[in-house]
Structure formats: C-alpha cells, structure tokens
Image 1 (cartoon, rainbow, N blue to C red):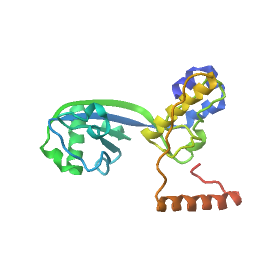
Image 2: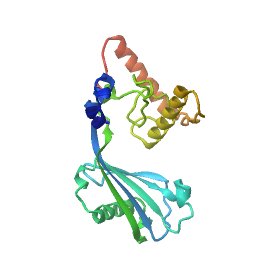
Image 3: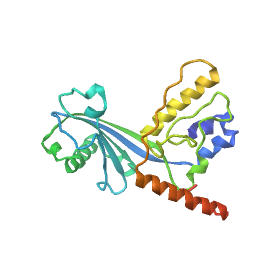
Image 4: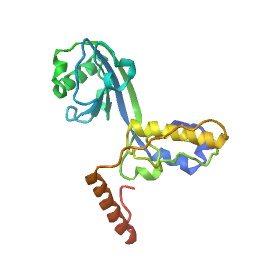
Length: 227
C-alpha cells in the first residue's frame, strides 16, 4: 500500500492515505509441510513460541481445518513465522527442518513422521507491525474516494469481535468491503458476516475495567499512548 501511495498522486494528495506511510511492517515466512502419515494434534491451531529469538510462529493442522485435506493419507501442516527477519536468508531445507523440529516439541507424534513434500514462501515487509501509536495512522474501510474500499487486518473502525493481527479479521474485512461495494453499486447480494462467540466472563470483566479506566483518563484530558 505504501508503494501505491508513493506512486499514485490521487492517493498521495489525501492525508488518510499519506498516514499509511507511518506504519511499519515485518517480514513473514509461510511454510506448508506434507507428512508421510497422519499425526493427531491436540488443537487444530497452536503457537510455536520460544523457539526463535526474534520470530514467533503459528501452525495449523489443515487436515482438521480444510476439506481439501480432510481425507489426506498424511498430515498437512502450515506454519507462518512473523518477525522472520533473521530467517529469510536460510535455505528452504533449513526452514523446513526448523519447522519440523519445533513441531516435534509441541506434538511428539511428529518425531516418527517424515516430510515428503514442502513449500516455503518469503514475504519481506509484508505484514503490518501493530505498535504503540500506529492506530492513528491506520485507515478506515470506507475512504474519501467514493468507490475505493479497503480490507485487511490493518484497517480500523470494524465493528466485529475479530480484532488485532489475524487472518480472521482480514477475512471479515474482505466480506465487509464487498458489502460496501454492493451498497455503492446498488446491486449484488451481500455476504453474511457472523460475529465471534461472546467473551468469557473474565475477559468481559477485564474489558469493562479497561473501558472504565480509559473513561477516567479521557475525563482528565489524558490520552492513551497506545492510540
């Protein structure tokens, strides 16, 4: 998006788009591993935390999540590394070996499995770095250009429970942007956007407490450094 703003005068003339230039981004590596046998996992998705000094990762068991792989003879696992700056120079084989090693610690069944195929994709500076102060520079989905609508987990002002850096939020905002196009064009069928399940009691209580504190700060004219 930053390159578009730099190269397109129509966007560069508008402050809402120029603010995007304030946002920072991180490197990402996406991997997919095919194994020779099925390895049950405790959860269909989980984190790979504490293995890399500067990167974090999430893995997904696609046999449980995608119909395409539900009846596959072996496990199909995808793992995404965020903040992967130091991992980008590694070879594909080294990245795959790292993923398998991490999986073996989290799910011991992978120790007896063999990787029969794999894919490694590198995306330098591809994901928004959500940091203190970045909220003010993030755009809304509807823009000052009547027929231009934005989607992605980086947009703000989305009334939905899928918040923060997440594939779910990117998906939801994609549906919402499509619905905005339907409204603008006056034709087409809108997508149904389902909300997330209600917060558990302790999460709901924490959110209420946070809102109360922010209300007090606002009344005193104090602004949160995170917004």
